[in-house]
Amino acid sequence: MSPLVPLCPPIDLSPSPLSGVGAVKSLRFGVGNRGVLPFCYPSTNLRSYRMPRKSAAAQATPIGESRKSLQPPVALSRAEALLFREIIAACDPVHFTQSDLPLLSRYVEAITLAEQAAEHLRDEGPVIQGRPSPWLTVSEKAIRAVVALSMRLRLSPQSRLDPKTAGRKPGGRPSAYELMDGENR
Image (cartoon, rainbow, N blue to C red; front, top):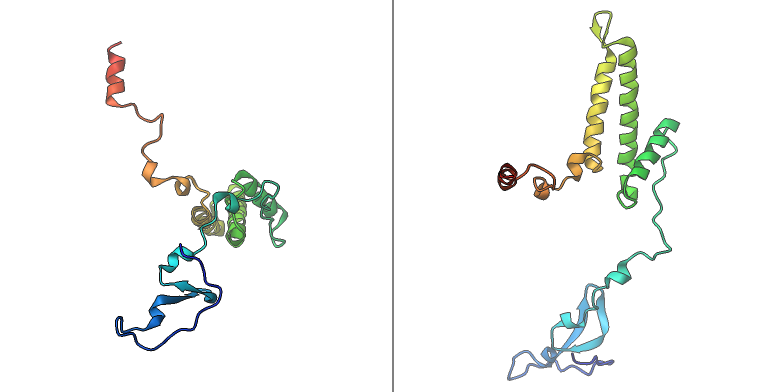
């Protein structure tokens, strides 16, 4: 790698009889995504002058610094806030980010509404005076919301399952060779 020249020498812009371009071809300015740099570079590949990528140690979070867990919004009821904290505590600390807060709040509200609808249906029954209970519709829509949000938040077993390794779980069905080995004993 050639050294950087701190001050740019004067540039001859007249065409050269050999290259047809002039002396500008021999120097390159450090023009990139950050603008013009105050150095002139020899006409080599500019990629060699980029900063090296950060090491894994530099990108890691320091040991003393911990991520702050999400807190339930003030708008949630006491039961919803309790459920919110239970879900946060049951998951990996890095599972949720601040951008998940609105979805997680709606998820908790939908679960609470589905439980409330189920309680009304247990007490009053699915049919009231010969007509379907309005709580059936509330229950159905709340359960749909719970299912959709659990997939988006990666809380359901199906959303956590890796489709590439779905059939390769140890302890599944024994192979034909294992069955034949068991018959010979």
